[in-house]
Length: 199
Image 1 (spheres, rainbow, N blue to C red):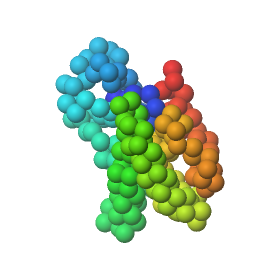
Image 2: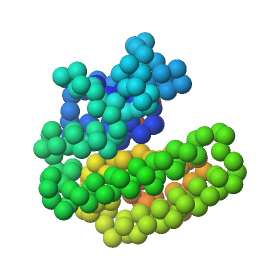
Image 3: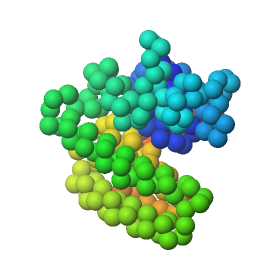
Image 4: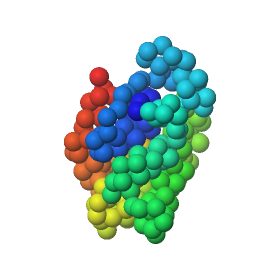
């Protein structure tokens, strides 16, 4: 398998999951400005959407979209970092992955846009803050977003919340979320992914 990524982008989530599962995989960096991979390939021929992540499977097929990739990886590994298909716990995991995608990923991501007006930035941060309030309440009841065990949803939540330091959202204001971020960042797989992406 090969994961196409951009350092610190949402591709960090499947990168963490690959390491948590102990998968053998290659990494290839993508310049999202030029749409070129580190080896000089036209990334739009790999993923016509032009953004990361993309997971190239051993069959040659390419899977895109972080939440789909992490579910695929966990299912293929038959791992407990994602509840079993058909269970209510699985639907809760899908519910949380969708919540992170729609309410955190897209909103936080929009704050990187240099053309955003001050009014739109303020409104977006207010909306994100309400969503973090909700997540902080969840994390006040148990250490991970789905309960007492690390899951693929934690890797995704950690990834998008880590963008706060770059876009003006001070995560430290939320005690439970701030503790969660430290707890996830201390995991060996997360440390290894961060180090690999910084290289």
